[in-house]
Image (cartoon, rainbow, N blue to C red; front, side, top):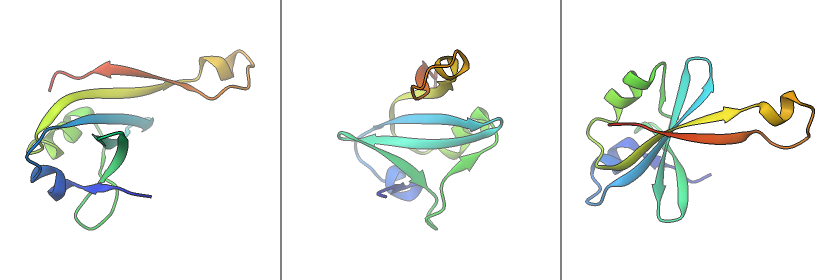
Length: 96
């Protein structure tokens, strides 16, 4: 799987659109839209960039030139009512 490291993002000359996904409770992962691809953001070591809060993720990404930022929330509604569809994702703009 392709990814982009935090140092690479910080050194980009053009801003990237950022998506932060709430995975489980208090675990947040981040992604950068580069062209048509949504790439996971990693630390310099290659480990996925994770945070325990939106504020912590914002702090980790403070030096990244950003276009837009949004929080991605998966809604289990279809699954809860018995449909066999995948969970839908809702994007909420972040004012970073």
